[in-house]
Image (cartoon, rainbow, N blue to C red):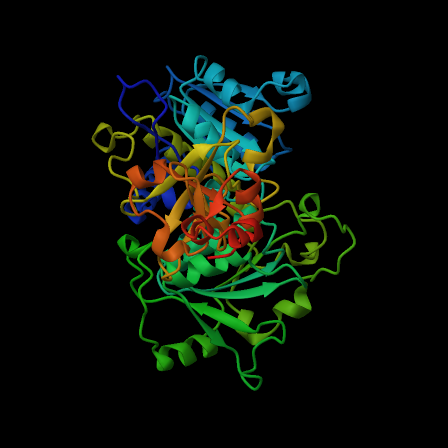
Length: 490
């Protein structure tokens, strides 16, 4: 997605904040470029490692800005830039940066853009990478923001799947563990759906996919749920599968079409062996209860026939959920998966900077889901994102963020999707700034144009609207004092 706050005299800058900022063609281009690097700069002993360097990025600098701990993501990005012949500058400890003095992320990004040509950012707040992209004139790559997304990890995961299965279409992938708090999983399931995979959720108790991720899979990526019969032979922890269409065309996103269920294909997917098992750790940094029950994958679990040929993946680090005794098994690919982080990130950096192939110039085109209607008002006015970990709630960013929501109409009733963290709000109140009235009939009163939204303010409920000096539309139209005093509802 392109930044609009960069200099007006310069072309729009390409950023990668979400896996959906990349088209399917973009992803395939990254993979082709990564394979070329593996072929041209091979390790003498391991085919999945980069063993040499080039000078293609000799005149460029990568800034790595990490507000959260990281080993693989930060070091693989820095290794990738060094292998490209470029230089790195890094801020890996917020305690030693100006963040400790209270500097906003928006200001930090604008300063760092003067020192580097591209930056990767990791931040504990959901949506922080999108905010950084708004203020950055150089490409921003999301290295993980809160529990939102981790798109470059997903690129490594998809690349591993393709290397092992020779394809991405119509795979059956089981995902185990903390599906709610894992940003890696959220990027991963969107990508799997786009490539027509069947997704088998195996969440730890209480750690199912977030509601907004589940809803997007169903409405925008055209997945439908297949309930697992008790006598199907599937694991007891599996209640349903997300089955995607053979061709979930990307341009269909946000249109919310209904698809005709193919019962025969559904049954076939139930019986099909698992192509990959993706294991995730307990994201303890995102949960108040640190002692929750958590599934453990061991050799006995993986001895089930359906996993006989499954690649076992893990984004790492692991903290006990995957038995180390399995490391020597032919199906264990997680350390190879981690190694692919270097060629994949080399490819992404070089393509964003236009280094590898001038004709590709910053992924010209990219993923455009169609025209989006965006509500955009000052942070101090009306409804704010309800996700308490969204970057809009960071006190240091109060002057940099706004109440920004994409109006989603895919299910008939309007919903609000936060531009930064992508959490959704279903119930809200629409008010007119000009006439000082509000109403709860959002479906008919919410403007459908950017111009109309400029005179609109949204509130969480009637009480908030009234506290801000707005009056019920019905009460305002009725001159009877009793109804005005009582705050009659529309």
